[in-house]
Image: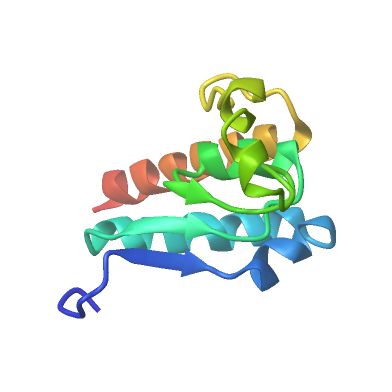
Length: 122
């Protein structure tokens, strides 16, 4: 994969849409796909972000870009000019507010703890 001529890894909306059924597993999967993409020198794009909570979670998990109704609904081209100025800004990955954001932060903490304990055993 490292040698293929692409710059972005896209995580399909079919993955993100299951966050309501099993948030922990979905966020774990997105996190590991994001880490894999970054380890290959690729940027990671997540589709299907349907709400601010999931946007916050994927920002914490390190995704580089996102798309979905949680960011914006389709709009006429003339509305695009004013749209960026009306947005609240990006979520703060260091200070999660939503349950999904807090879960994402916890998943990263657990992963770091696991890696540290593994390194101490070897």
